[in-house]
Image (cartoon, rainbow, N blue to C red; front, side, top):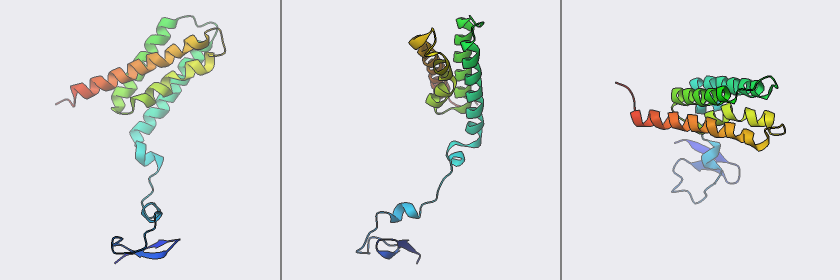
Length: 141
């Protein structure tokens, strides 16, 4: 029968119900440790990298004085967040944040001010819309 070590009370048997001493730390000290890559998955990790780069690029382009086309920026925010959320099928909040946060970070102190937070709302609208559409339509086949 395997025994577990508890720093406060020494060895505990696998049958903790028969033991009079119970260590609260015992259950998590012997649990397997998952890495971030295992929790998220390789595909979602790659999507997160792509979403962050796309969001950073959109934020940089939108902050340039020569860029004066909010409609194209809004459409790209909606489409890219929707595409990434649909490809992933989960965590729409993450995709909305990774794509939409860069424009407010670049422009919150500029002329746009708090109006740049609309980019985050557009990104959330696209990501949650695509996520819900993917959930309702279900798997093809």
